[in-house]
Each structure stands twice: as structure tokens, then as C-alpha cells.
Amino acid sequence: MEKGDIILEVEPIVSSAEQSPFFAEAVDTNIRTAKTKVMVKDGETIVIGGLLRTEKTKRSTKVPVLGDIFPFLFKNRAETGKKTDLVMFLTPKIITEKEAKEMVEKEKTRIEKK
Image 1: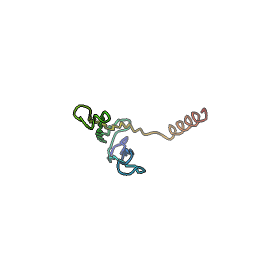
Image 2: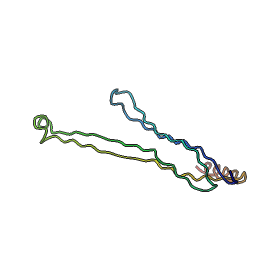
Image 3: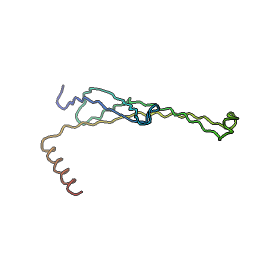
Image 4: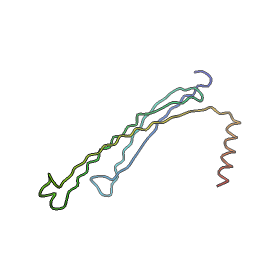
């Protein structure tokens, strides 16, 4: 390892909740996670991706009464799909003690202005 190298251990977690299709009061939780360890130079950017999610939704509509009698004429079924991918860009930077103090002072000033 050379001077200016940074080792990152990153474990992004993405979670979502949706109502359970089986129990009215319950919630189903979906969790996606990735774990990686990478070495990068000070100030360089790394990209982490691959937290994929695919959702499929089925929907059915019909005209009351007629949809039951003539479903081929008065009923509609549709299926939609959605894919998402979380991509993160990380740029680590080594800071000196002096830079850290300056950052703290700036943040204190910013918070006091609120």
C-alpha cells in the first residue's frame, strides 16, 4: 500500500416496505445489499452498482356486470414492469487536522444561521 491509498469497506443497504398481500396489518420488507472492499487513491472516484430490483404489477379492470358476462369484450388485463438499479459514486479524500477543524467551524456557522 502506497502513501495516499485508501481502503474502503462499503456495504450499502436498500430496504423498502409494502403492505402484505396476506395480512391487512402486516408489512413485507425487501432488502438489497452489496458488500465490497476496494483500494483507491486519494481523490479518485469509484462506482458501486448492482443493487437491482424488478417489480411486476398485474392489474385487471372490467365493466360491472358486463365484464362478468362477456369478459372478452368488457374486461382488461394489464401487466407492467419496472427495473431499478442503485449506482453510487464515492470519492474519498484524506484531510489534514487543520482541514478538519476548518470544516467543523464552517458547519457550526451554517447551523447557527438556521
